[in-house]
Length: 243
Image (cartoon, rainbow, N blue to C red; front, side, top):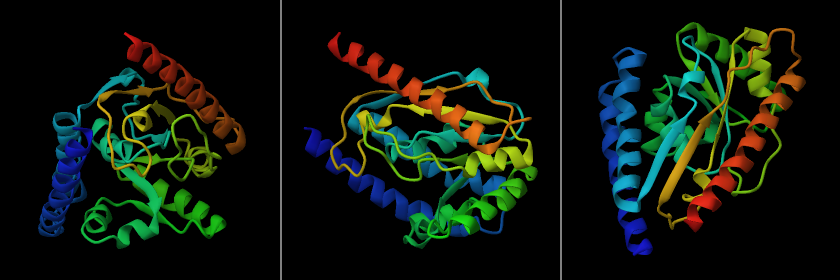
């Protein structure tokens, strides 16, 4: 049944991507936050289908840690799930992503209209400047900034090198940083067709004020919190599975 459910989900996800991409073209003339609400309807639909078809539920802990002003969210990257879910679980965010993603038919069209920060990862210095310059612009416009510091999805239980971009933006814009951990990779693995039913926990950590901190120190503090929380979530998931 996992194969059948995963196949149905993939088919419906693909069809919905095309339909919402066409809808995105229609809302192009509207203000950013109107476009955001319409286009992220696709995110809501996909998260709903993942729950109804594949049995992938979620819970959020730490919502009280979200600042009332636009902030920089630095999140663990394990799965496609968090790239779809976080934009609707958190306040409106500009996502830092690879420029190549905007070239993907249909999906890229919708993403391009959400004011992402599309970087060339092959040019690290230029990407860092772009994150700092465009990140400040997005924050000033009332958008948060969502960045996955590992830069690519890591298999559950693994960690990648945390890039400095989010911490650099925070220290150069005096914006709060919110670390986010989750165990989505346990149910929706990296590049996997098969999905597993279960509960994803999204854990939002206390906001970190970058005042007086160097980017390296801030980045290390974010990494320490996320990776410690990942171990806790993994242990919790193992205990729940044995019940």
